[in-house]
Image 1 (cartoon, rainbow, N blue to C red):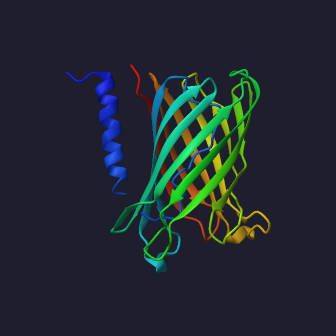
Image 2 (tube, helix red, strand yellow):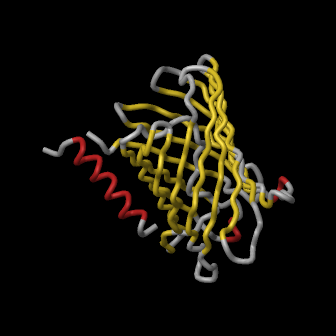
Length: 254
């Protein structure tokens, strides 16, 4: 009989096999709002995010775009997490990986039931480009984690910036995200996530040219695992019109 640990590793290997075959889409692979959850010191965790989105412009005939992100994280110390992220995507008949990212995240000690908390995440990743004409580039990202809990409510803000490492381009892009959630029961909550790709930090794009998404999400905790289902919509003509999202995390330790 398969043990729980063997089942976890089977899920992990199957997901990583899928991700090594997965292609370009306009929806970001890392579609999540960061809260105060970090992997415990000495523990290992696997997280997977998958999205499917339909383009609003039927004349482009792009069909449904799929993205995914597989992440293996390790608690290197109390409140510190180191992880490897493997983003990928699929559109129509095209399949490819889109890079790899090394991430370090910190959340300061705080009351997990009530009040303010803060932290941050920094990433260094290799972007392989979206097609054969796009050169591979190195990118650095820094994202703040600002959250507040009161009773059953939680608000989170993740202002983030991304910039290339090396090359002639020095453009810094701004991509904030946020969430407002309500805890229905101890194990379940409902929330509204908001994502924006505002373009250059020095000269943000006008609102009608920004990638902007609103996603209604349901979160639940089952045993030691977390699951999230979401349905969303682009907020303007340049964003994907309909979006589905699946996210789960499982511990890999006994």
